[in-house]
Image (cartoon, rainbow, N blue to C red; front, side, top):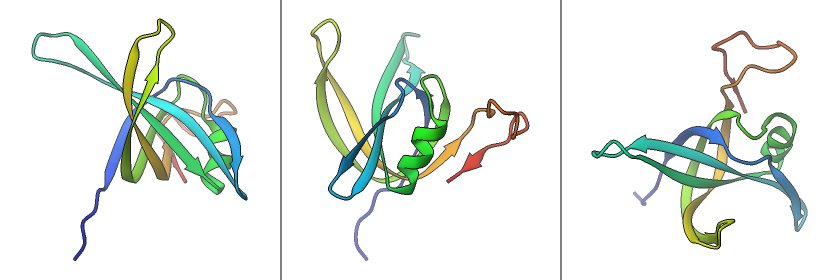
Length: 119
């Protein structure tokens, strides 16, 4: 049997998805913040960059917005580096989504409070 990673990330979206075409496929990329308090009671935030491909890119572009609560399932992580608005180097993880679960209520009222929509 081979090796594998299966991960689930639940957090708030930090930016509207940016959609672009790579080859013949669409990809929607957006950031998700996962926060916790450390032993000293200080908030720590880890940013995860999500790439949703093909049909998931369409779903992300249509339904996901900054501030949305989402759950992402993926099977691989890649480390990446970026520079924030103050010029400070930051680290994040990139994941290709295999499944998206929208935990927010839809604006048009299609979902009852507490319902989730999975793709």
